[in-house]
Every structure is written in C-alpha cells, then in structure tokens.
Image (cartoon, rainbow, N blue to C red):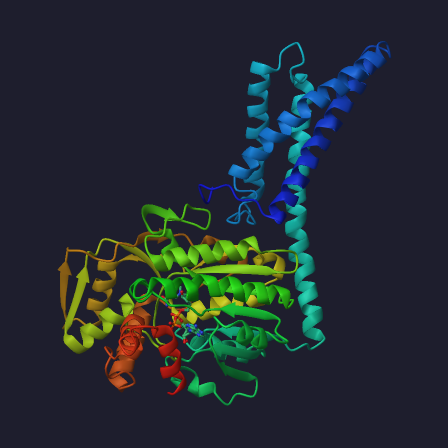
Amino acid sequence: MNSSKLRFTTGMLLRMGADAVMVNAALLTALALWFMALVITQDGANAGVIFRSMLDHFTSAAWPLTLVCLVLFYFSGFYTYGRAYQSRYKALIVTQAVTQGFLAFGFLSSFFGGAGGGFMLPRSALVLAWLFSLLLLVGSRVWTTLWVKIVSPERAAIEAKRGRERTVLVIGGAGYIGSALLPKLLDKGYRVRVLDLMIFGDEPVERILNHPRLEIRRGDFRHVEQVAEALAGVDSVVHLGAIVGDPACNLDEELTIEVNLTATRMIAELAKAAGVERFVFASTCSVYGATTETLDERSIVRPISLYGHTKLASERVLLDMATERFAPTVLRFATIYGLSGRTRFDLVVNLLTAKAKIEGKITVFGGEQWRPFVHVDDAALAVSTVLEAPQAVVANQIFNVGSNDQNYTIQEIGELVHQCVISADLILDKGDGDRRDYRVNFNKIRNLLGFAPRWTVRQGIQQVLDAIANGDVSDYSDPRYSNVKFLREKKSVARDNWAQELVRVIASQ
Ligand SMILES: NC(=O)c1ccc[n+]([C@@H]2O[C@H](COP(=O)([O-])OP(=O)(O)OC[C@H]3O[C@@H](n4cnc5c(N)ncnc54)[C@H](O)[C@@H]3O)[C@@H](O)[C@H]2O)c1
C-alpha cells in the first residue's frame, strides 16, 4: 500500500467494477458446472431443487466473496496509483492476491457460513470459481499488456508517418534539467515551447536560442493567462518548474506551496481542459524521506521536508486527475550531478568536486546517509524516453529515475571525489548532515522503458573537474549556481512581497 489513506478515483472504481464482474462471472460459471454435474449424476432427479440451491449459493456467496477479493486486491496494489505490476511478475502477484481472496473467503465461510442462511459454497464450486477467477483476472491483465505492446507502437508509427510535428511545452525549461532536455527534444524533431521566468538569465539556453523550432516565453507559471496562452497547440507538457531543494523551499513556505503545489494543480487543470494528453511531472526521490529499506515506486513515502511534501502532494493531485485522455507520468529523480546549461553547485557531487579542486578540501557531513544519483543528461534522457514511450505504458505511472548501481552513501561520494582529486583532504564530520537517507530501486524504468543511465558518478566528477580546469566554471560559490543563495539574495531586495519583487528584478535583467 502506498499511503495510509484510502483514496478512490474514477479509474480505480472502474477497474474495481471490472474485477467484481469477473469474480462474479467465475462464481456463476463454477456453480453452473456444479449444478450440471449434480443433475447428471442424479439422472435429472431433483433438478429443480438443485437449481434453486445453486441460485441460493450464488446470491448468498457473491457479495462476501466480491468484498473480500476487492479489499485484498486493493491492498495488493491493484488499484493504487503506485501499481507497478506491468512486469513479468504481474501474473504472479495477481495469482497470489486471487488465491488469498479465495482462502480468506473459505476461512470466513467456515466460521459464518454454516446452515441457516450462511454463505458456505460446495468445495468443488469454490475451487472451480477460484480457477476461473484466476483465468479471467490474469488473462485480462496479460491481454491489456499485449494490447499496449502491439497496438500503441503501431499507432505511434502511423502518427510519425503522417509527419505530424509534436509540440512540447517545457515549464521551467531554462533550469538545470531543462537546459539539458531542450537540445534533446529539438534533436528528436519536436517543436519546443518554454515557459520560464528565466530567473537564472538567458545563459542556460543561449546555445539554442535561435533554433527555428524553439520558442521561449518569459513568464510566471503561477499566472493563469500566461499558462493558458503557452498551452495553445501543445500536445505534451513537461513540468520542471519549481522552487527546488530543501533549503530554498524553507526560505518562504507560503511561496513554496504556491509555486510547487498550487500552480501545478492549476497548470494540470488547464492542460487537461486544453486536451493535452501527456503530462510529465518532475518529482523527486526526496519523497521517500529517511528509511533503511530499498524503496521502489510502491513503497511507503514519508517526506521529511516541505520540498518533499509539496512534490508528493503534487504527484497525488496529478494522478487523481488521470483519465483516458489525460495521462500524467511522475518522474522521481535521484539527486542530480554533472554539467548542463545551468549547472548547480548546491548538489553534493558537484559541490564536493568543486571544493576538492578549488579549496583542496572535501568535507563530508554525517556520511552514512544513502542517496541515489543520476547525471543531469540522463535525467533529461529519461524525460524524452517517457515522451517517446507508448502512452498506455507511461499513463498514470510513477518512475524512479536513476540506476540501482548509483546508490551511494555520502561518504562513498566523498571517497570517489577523493580518488579523482587525490591531493585534497577528505574530512569526515560525523556531526549533523542532511537527514534524507534512502536507497532506491530503479527496476521499473529499466524493465518497462529500457532506460539505463549513460553516465557514472566518476565520469560526472571528471566532467566537473574538466570544466574547472578549462575555466568554464570559475567561481562555483557564485549565487547563480545555488538555488538557496540566489533566492536568499533576491529575497533581501524586498522583504514585504519578495515574490513580486523577484519577478520585477528578473524582468529587468
Ligand atoms: N536537480 C535535482 O537534483 C533534482 C532532483 C530531483 C527532482 N528535481 C526536480 O526537477 C525539476 C527541475 O529541477 P532543476 O534542478 O532543473 O531546477 P532549477 O531550479 O534549475 O530550474 C527550475 C526552473 O523553474 C523556473 N521557475 C521557477 N519558478 C517559476 C515560476 N513561478 N514561473 C516560471 N518559471 C519558474 C526557474 O526559472 C528555473 O529555470 C524540479 O521540479 C525539481 O523539483 C530536481
């Protein structure tokens, strides 16, 4: 189960309804066979009595069996947004849940289902109903998976043949991930529109500014009119815009909620109303919080920061809005490293590397916390992979973005940096570090979408070292490389309504 709260969307209710129909059809078929077998063995005698008994069995057993099965299916994750069973394990998990459902029903009926109007079923009918339910429930899921695999790529191929140019709106596209993503989308032939306040200036996108298929709109995604205008003629939305990182989000909690959550809901509602089918949302593995387990998309989420909470709440808002024609996909990025048009030096790999090279010191705080990592270029690759994937495979899905072999403790990251800058001192400060601590499983994105990162952390460290050596990065501590420093600086410009002031300051850049 993903959350301690029960939540039902229209899609979930429809799937539950379909499962209920299948369980009841299986029960009725099993009882009909039981009836025929009895009539045959008794040479047709008492056929009327047996028929009435069959109907009695069905009417008394159908509702408790359905209820028990649906509850077990729900808690096995069949309907929750984190259901990640589109893999080869799917048949196994469905088999297990159906079997548990029938065992629980059998157990209950032996207690409450005796004579006098209970819901005890003949054993042979119960076993047959279990078998038929298995066939129907597993079969329907296998069929859906096959349908998606066969039909969706064919549709995509037909669309591509028609030569339709697809337009993507990238909200927050001039940031760290966005500036790595835009060239990839342009290379794939997309028409790309960016809606961004450009708070870090034009520099992140300056290399592609004159691309004929790129349109940059400087605007605030909290404003309905600006978002509505930006959505005109768009097929897909990638929403990267946010106040990013725990320290930056803590500067002004109200503004963080407005930017990270309220605006996300508004953008998604407008996109849905405008007929946009694909909506890719940038979330974070920070939603997992602090835990000793290795977590996948179905694990319990326990964010420990405002940033994580706003991202998790946004995920839920989006996934609750999913319909046949509106397909949100949530990407929970690992912690990012490496260079892009807007490199950040407030993230652990880049920061430790720059400090090692420039200050000759690698200070690791805490050190035992686990964290998954992914290169910024691979994060961008994941977004474009999702946009290219058959819609039915990614619709209403959550994917962790990274790879199993890039889970490291912060101390291990310090040691990797030290191996690359051997002259630097590695200082382990066992005092307070960042409390986030999680190891993440990335099988789902690899198995379903074939996504595998191309970069390793060591290569990312080397990339940063080369940029420093070439003079591409001179002062890594400049506020433009750090979200919290940058926003703190702008905040001090106007204490009263710094958000408005930020917009004014930026607009005059
Ligand atoms: N960088 C990471 O390690 C990381 C990890 C996990 C998830 N993410 C998520 O990925 C997304 C992108 O992260 P990033 O590192 O590229 O962030 P970033 O801060 O570099 O980029 C955010 C962009 O959003 C824009 N923006 C902010 N508020 C805006 C507003 N009101 N209107 C218009 N534009 C606005 C900024 O100008 C900036 O270009 C975020 O949603 C973040 O939560 C990032």
